[in-house]
Image 1 (cartoon, one colour):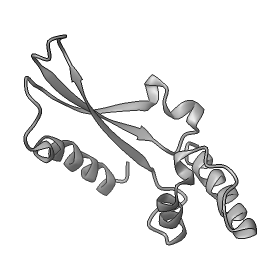
Image 2: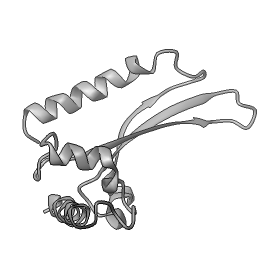
Image 3: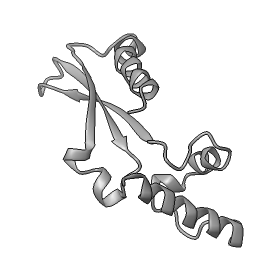
Length: 123
């Protein structure tokens, strides 16, 4: 099960924080305090799916004549050795150019709405 990595990693992290008061090494995005606190207070459960959102622009031509934007979802439930492999990085959407988007949220809304639908249907 994919959630087992996240569950075991947080178990290790929480035990180390309880024992020492801090982590010796921050080697995974799951070691960030925002995610640890969300896990501790129940906003993220042991069996939840955790996604990381990433967006970036790309120049299509050398003379900066056109720019496009792409966003992806990364499944944090997988170990770092697996989560960044091509088959585990999910394309969220593409924002066409030729210029930078003036209102990025308007392009992201359909993809986020789809994600909400998947959450309600218990993917």
